[in-house]
Length: 513
Ligand code: TEU
Image 1 (spheres, rainbow, N blue to C red):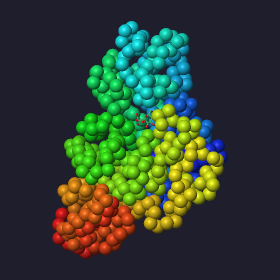
Image 2: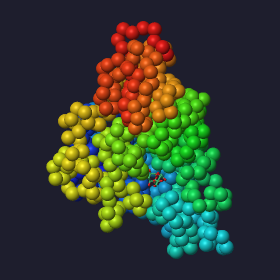
Image 3: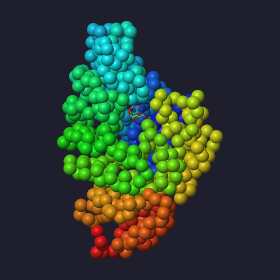
Image 4: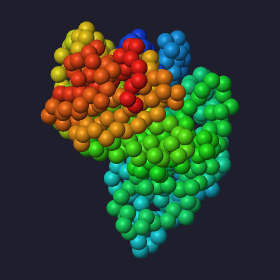
């Protein structure tokens, strides 16, 4: 399981109210207690923070808000000592407008780095004079006029995030050097931000009329990206140990995601956000899982599941505030075939924070999910300064220390699921077979290739008790989201919003598989 930390929101050890690397480092013991395998840190590089660090002005420096390079090295060492891998968030599609590359690029039409970004003349009639009809992801058009040199520059996100021109080999070389810089320091890999956007057809053609009111993030899929991905993979493969990249490819359907694995020579992992976007409905979840399995098994690839991240409402908030539903989701996430990603704080069942207008920081309204993590019930909840965003609701009761000391809390459910997953070859790497049971129940088996280990997962998405029958008296309830029936034989009945992992009882034979 890969645990995503949004560093500004995790823990503040410097007292300035913004989370930092020292704050993360002092929580490594908690992360090993929980049982995570790797950490992914949202960007920690030097940044003017127009987009919370996804606007990088120096890829090889730590932003002073987060600490120093020496502090980073200490965090890396402590994580490795605790058996945790560390992944950084590489932002290849765009830099900050304050990056020296862009400062040079905009300085004159003849500057060496002019072609490192997309500069174009306007087109008179259409699009209010802009080069094409593209929209930016956070509102407005994707082009900003630069007075000094009288041309437009392209940005698929904020105007402070100009897009890099990867068709220029010098850009690719410079960005590959960034990877090498961090790999040489010992990081285990990267999450790659909107990596499907990096290849662009230099004609920058208009979006067709049917898509003209959508930004490009969900639809852009240029074939030239794959050449870049293969060269990125070659860099990773040159290093010892397993160095991996998980790509954020925002193309809804698994059919469109599958090519991003290449022939096992592009990305090792590609996020699947299908479940994150699904309504609370067992059949909808089953459809997403079955479609993902179909496309990935064709290419022998491995799924990467996320139910939340720093861009989306918290799970419990999306599920109508219900902790029971959040528990069912946890059990499913941690028993699916593939690598699960968990956004920090989901293991506490946190809700989105209420952020008043005057407290807003993010231009895209994503502050509520980025509220600080409460570590204990003291006034500052374990932070050394007063945090930059308000606390999530119920922080007095719902914080790490309270959750750890209550064996029935959701954090213990996550911890036990992670322990079971680690102990079970079927859950770790077995096949996933969906089972037809009841429309309200998501059901699947996980089985190793030699059938020596198998588990059954049953998740009741409804508010009613569901009778499933027990096709096999040998099943034992290993984990139940509400604790009920654990250790007992399976009696064929799920309570409302109850999910269970079943295993074989010791010594049983002749199972009905
Ligand atoms: O996000 C890509 C993206 O477009 C969406 O997830 C977007 O944040 C959401 O639709 C807005 O509501 C990635 C990062 O995860 C995000 O934090 C960055 O802001 C964005 O890229 C630009 O780097």
